[in-house]
Length: 247
Image (cartoon, rainbow, N blue to C red; front, side, top):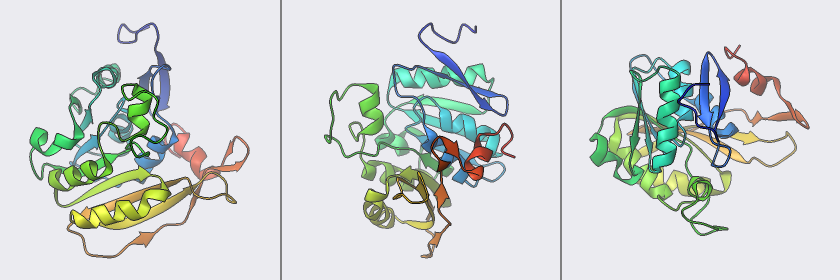
């Protein structure tokens, strides 16, 4: 096994010739990252910033699913950033993906204003303090707004996006009004939305959002995405997302 992988870690296959190093004792990526990577619409030569990149899953997936020229993953936890950097190295993507250790609330100072075409984020869903056990635990930081807030994310997104740049978020529907209000307040217009349902007869548990910096008001609501057609059986659309070439 590669010396990039530590004894307590595992190597997971992502398809498309890519792999990711994960530590089962910390927060591993979930389906929400995969769904977000499929929702992003990237164009050739664009620069992408992933805010709160964790183990680097989104930049790695997007390196294969878009023709972006350069991708940056910003992560506040040094251990997670190190894990992401080793995954980048394992996949020989050092010339395309850069992992930066830092606070997303300081993104504009780190990278400069209007420096990215696209910003992505799979941020903590829960407001800080709700069910929080250990504020320094990697899983709590990934799930709760301990190190950042939703407003931090959207404010810094607006700063680092180029005019007409796009942002892509995955979040929980119960915070949708708050998300849209903050986007509007910081000059990002929600343009596209898709609700995600675990089963067709259940309530949605995720929402995918696209916004344009300085865009005109017009929101397109896409057809619902249903994850399971029966217990532990993905729908055909989701199965295609997990196939090696997305076919």
